[in-house]
Image (cartoon, rainbow, N blue to C red; front, side, top):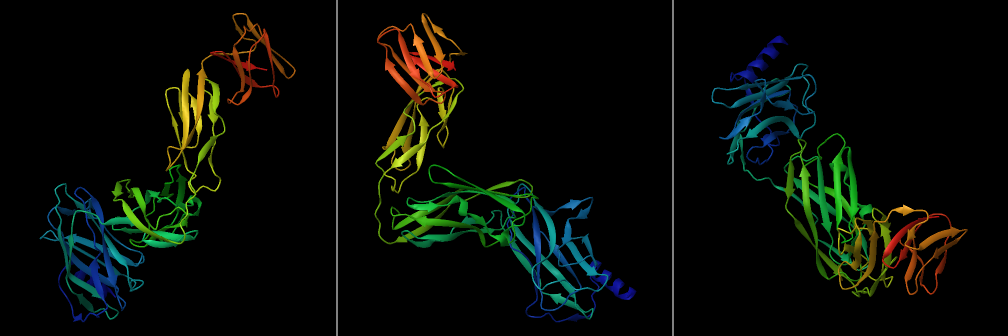
Length: 462
């Protein structure tokens, strides 16, 4: 046993070779294809496809100019995959020609597990001026079950400085009214842990954000979140709780459910944009936009929107108040139901993508809700913002306000003044033109109300 151990060490650390047996036609040892950008640190994957058991190996690797080994405390960043159990000892040595000799052998004479896949990893770093080149691997020897050296052919790999990473959806056909599941594919040379992508469906193709799911073969502890925007796009975000890598480098990443409406075109484009993928070291890669051809079949009859109806058309608010507007597209069976929101003056009123507004400063502004693909179809809400303070019995000159039971009385009003009562969130409860000194309003109960007298706004506590 001691002689076997000594001979293996000599095999790994020198070129004193013993007897060599023939390699099987189905056995190969090579470097997985990779590209490295200048200034980047990457990991070379050494792949072993084997039809017989092997108990150790050695190989010499030569790097091109501008590509260097990653070292920690003068130790080469070389490791074994899970195909080698704990009985394996690994060795590495930088040779006089600046190539590196790596190897491993099993002290307990156990073979590498499985018969395909990554066997070892080697860390490399590209200089800022790296322009690509050729990596070579020679003097490749494996030890078989008879402790014979099996010689593998030399191999080389040409590497460039541009990654080949692509996220896309294959072209697909769909019938009008049909719901089907499509896939988002990821071909990634770069190892990623997280990503964000935006799906831009064409007119008439509906995507259910709740139907989107991750392919189990590509994930470990990854979690998914989605957000649907009023303009129809869907944002998909995936993160790993442990910063784990997405598995594999090719295949389905996501499943997405889509439905073809009547207004879909016979041929249209699904776009994937804003593709940001992240490595374990938080380095981000922006992948190119991709397009998918969607071919639809069936009867195409679009029902166009004719109007938009808002929950409120006039609001009177105090500075700092928030309010929620809702919008409905008519007719109810219109194919286009998406709504976009805008404010004519965001220094007075702001409004979110879902109609949530906030009063910023005194003044008047108009909120508009319009159809996504038909901006000429819209509805508006005029909002007036006041900065008056809250009072229980306010006075404007000789005007007084009192509340008794469910009746609000406003006294001392001149004639021909418009007076309106609103709920705190701007719902109009009553309005009148004064013809006498007193106006009465019926109120639902205790609470805070806004009284609009001419150009003055008051907050009333009952």
